[in-house]
Every structure is written in C-alpha cells, then in structure tokens.
View (spheres, helix red, strand yellow):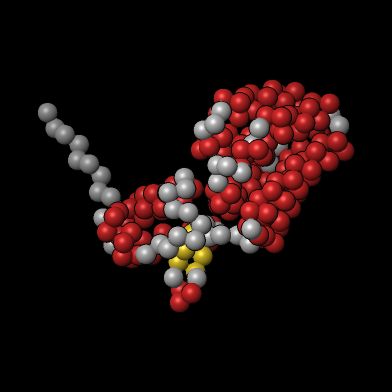
Length: 220
C-alpha cells in the first residue's frame, strides 16, 4: 500500500505558524505589555530562524501588538491613556454603525436572538478571566458581523489586537466589571425595540465607560 508523502512546509507556512504562536502568546497574556521580545530567544524557543521571527514581529507591529522601544528593541505594546480613549471612540463609531445597519435591515429579530445567545457566554464564563475576555470580544464581534458589512468587520478586526492588549494590561482584577451580561443587555434591548437613537446612545455610553475604565489603568 502506497503512502502519500507529507507536504513540505514552505517558508510562508512556517512564517504563518510562528506569527500565530506569537500572536496567541501576546493575546493570552503569556507576554505582558512592556515585555521585551528578543529575536534570538524567540527563534531558539520556536526552533526557527531569526529571519522568520523577524518577519512575524514586523507583522505584529503592523497589527499594533508590538512596538519598537529604545534602541529599536521590540516590546509588547502598551497603549497610552489618549490612545485608549481614541481606540474606544473608533469602536463606538464602528459598533454604532453596526447597530444602525442591524436596526435598518431585514433580519433584526434574528440578530437579537443571536446576540442574546452570545451574551450567555458572558454569564457562563464566571470568574474565568480568559473565558470572559473571549466572551466579551465575541459578543462585540458578533454585533459587527450581524450588520452584514464585511468592511466594518474587517475594520473592527484590525483593532482587536490593541483591544486585547488594553484589557490584559488592566488584568483580571479590574477588567471583569466591564464584561458582564448586565452591561451588554441594554444594547440588545435597544436593537430589539428598533430604537436607533437609544441604541446609539447605549453603545456610546458603553464605550465611553470602557475607555474611562481602561485608560485609568494606563494612567496609574
């Protein structure tokens, strides 16, 4: 019986795997904001060349997860108070557009049902910080996806790394108060009622409160 040969891993596949490994380590909190990311150490740990690590780190810089510090040393990004405020203002604009398109679209009832299902994950997460972060971001991503606007989703995804960095910087003691079903259900209720003005107001208040919460951590 003949056996199909395994495909040879080309350079692009290896680079993607390294990129995924580093991105996951940062987003999970294994590397904290401000931690140094050394090419030599990472290459040794991952068993790849420094060039492959360098390419992955360059990509992470473009995503906003990594920044160059003194003498070009790369570190996990840490957003300033003004950057966090700006980040959440952009989120408010994007998610405000999402609720506008959902309320004005033909599938509002289905969207409400999907969002009520998504919010259950926040309740199920309990005290598990990582699970609560995933449930919180999953809810907001679902909100954007339900708009049916692919460019909106792409724009939100572009911010996701910096959103995660901001939450991780606050840590499990401060962040969970912002990630509860009670804080998210008013968004769903306003959409359910078809009240666009109320929905936009709730999204704006939600993001303003989050910005103040997380930028307070950055400024402390």
